[in-house]
Length: 175
Image (tube, rainbow, N blue to C red; front, side):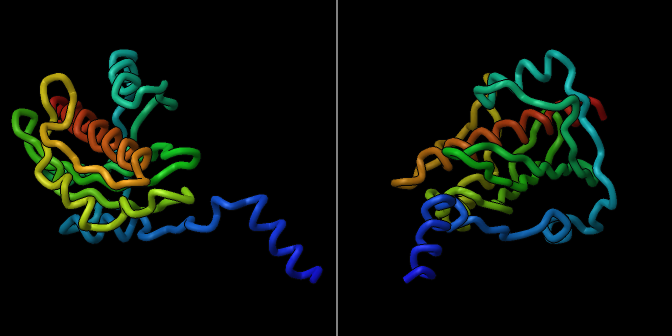
């Protein structure tokens, strides 16, 4: 009986750990998406203008002075995090193309720490982001169908997709 009570207390105190999982590491994601995986990340320095636009995209202030990314020719990889309901969702986004014509090549949930909304990790959902571009007003050019019960997770992935496209545009403009 005491063991059951202990288990119940642990589960009730920390219910969010029930679905917490790392599905793929950053090195594995890079190996999967690059001919020769970059050995070290590059940095996009976040000027006040970039921070302002990033804040508008995320709907919250952005922390840090730089965004790290990996690149190969006209392809960039971004490992970004956004809060779903209460905990961060880690997503890898591959964006490719020139400054005039770029799109999402691949989006994958690398780690999910929420108790609900984990369905966004499946390819049946993330494949919707393939070939999505950014409009001039920094929105996604295609509608992403939601998942019942995972609205906040879907919104988080949409924000990450928009931010990765915006950051890629900035990097492409520098090159």
